[in-house]
Length: 290
Image (cartoon, rainbow, N blue to C red; front, side, top):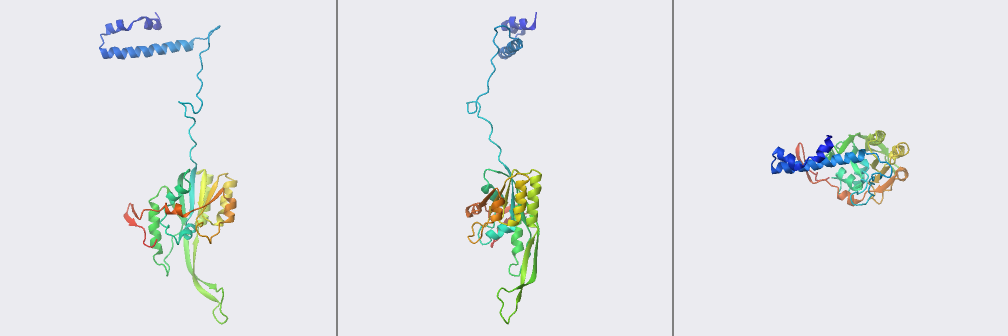
């Protein structure tokens, strides 16, 4: 006899009687028998070649999107985004406000709520003590410490700061007075070059779908244009000086950017660090004059 015939002809009661099975075993065997018989039946049906007027088995059609049981394709993934922050351009935009204790990761999320913020790059330089502000380095170091709590979502890229005395001509010198005056000239070096370099390198390495730049510095126009024209990636520029009515938006950046948007006071106010923070070295507080 073929296995199929035996399987069909042997009754469950007779086999179970020979096994002397318990009630639980009888139930399990019955379920197993039904499953095996279903598999055999399906195999016989699918292996039989239709002939004559025999109907071809019905092919199930996929459900249309929106029908119960098929919710449709998954939504597109949010755009991978890296945010590039021109630290000194941002600082001078908010210097006279109460928003300097700024959580840059929180700000990026508020500016681009539908994007996947993979990384925030902060470009700055360490300031030195000045005669009129000897505590500036201490305050800045405390802010760096706050930003370090955001790692690995945020990376700090440091240039260098130069401060030296130079002779400058007076705008309106007196006829019999001095024509020049000695002033302290402070210059930040490297941040704009570092930002431009990382914007291009990350783009060539395909680390982002969208780049966002927080700055109003027109010197960044060329690397932004290169990212758009060569890499065909969008670059959104956020102007941090929009709160100052005396500050004009950069026409050059507006022309080269995919989008040019202002940063409002509300976004800054809702993106502040807590006054008291904790890191691996213990607790620390927002500087009193920050």
